[in-house]
Length: 161
Image 1 (cartoon, rainbow, N blue to C red):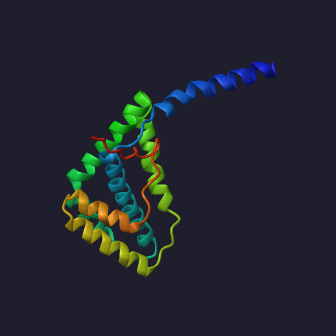
Image 2 (cartoon, rainbow, N blue to C red):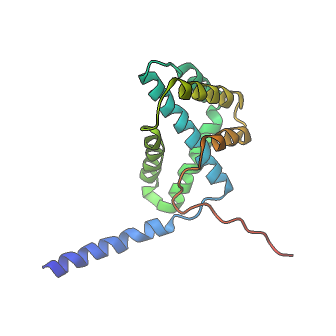
Image 3 (cartoon, one colour):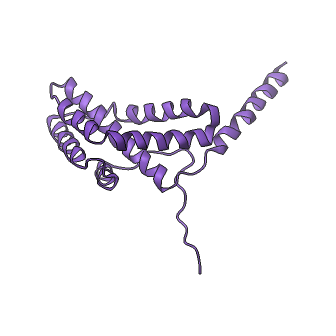
């Protein structure tokens, strides 16, 4: 009986592996989209944390979202396509898990008046980017490392002539 249960568990693991293995690397566009989404998550969560200590950044955050709406939507579309390509019908669930993990990663960060002021400044700067992906990526880079990407970033290769 135990042998049968172990066999079923092993079969389940083998069946689960192709979906993970199918997740390919993230090209430059998809990795940039993830970085933009990560910036949005960082700003959103910091806005909520600051509000909890009585500092209201909602106006600055909402302006960032309004001024970058089409870029944020495009980034989410690229990320969803990446997960759909890697996970097929389970792609939407994988996308939801990924974006939730981005936000959860910042929930326990420290919060202070200084951090809130830095976040407000970043939100204003990001709003001024007005959809310019290069500017948004530069802001994201200043905040810290890129998010972990299932499948990793694609290696950069150069063709030989």
